[in-house]
Image (cartoon, rainbow, N blue to C red; front, top):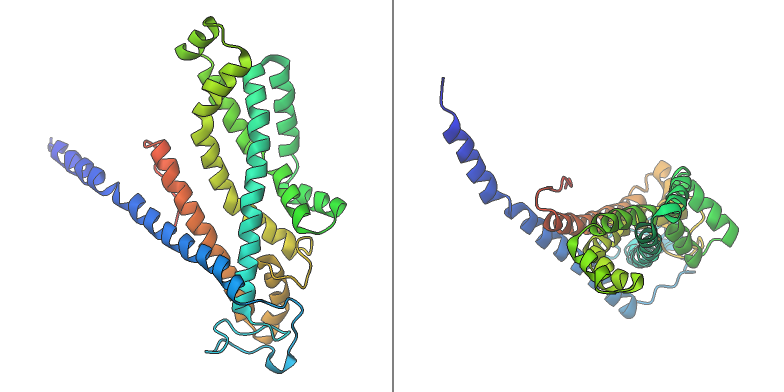
Length: 294
């Protein structure tokens, strides 16, 4: 029999030596991309004031050029400026909606895990009931009831994306309740609220922050889908979903740049956020390597 132990040892050494490099490259690349996008969406609107009602048919439907790097749309508006303004809206919606959904999910998950019994069963049945309805369909209903606006989109995403946070927090608290330091705190006379605030919630904080970060790109895509359906921002206001919705008519006439620019920027931004989330997830759980594709 051929001894292959040295081969296995060599592969293990190579894997250990190479493992840290990929997360480090992913972290640096994602951080640089997000840094550039963040500076752009903050600085450019302060320097260049985009008139959302601007119409100049003399320069409409122009392909990319030096004057307009991303071309112009059917109203003569600069696509690059509208992409920057639209990305600012999408990122703001994604961050705020992710915070809303994470706070709501954390409260429900913590209550279910700490209370147990019929409270846990009731809240988990609520989670299963909401999960049985497609997120997009429920979001459309909420926006239709509240009316298309930025606030309605944030509320819609926050009320439909808290389920994963609730399940994560509940499972973490259930695993922590049996730890010796929790028993010691209870024996020492700590109240249930004190145990929750001093011991349980601080220990689930890393998982909650990770869930928030992972929720941001999903919320951005959800906002884009609602705007694409005409249920997001007002039609004249720049948002990634509105731009893609407007550009679908131009694809038949050869205006490919109108949909390429917002779609490409959206994909790059969400991949960068997902890259940072993947590195963070690997550091919280080193045994599980992220399988995000670039």
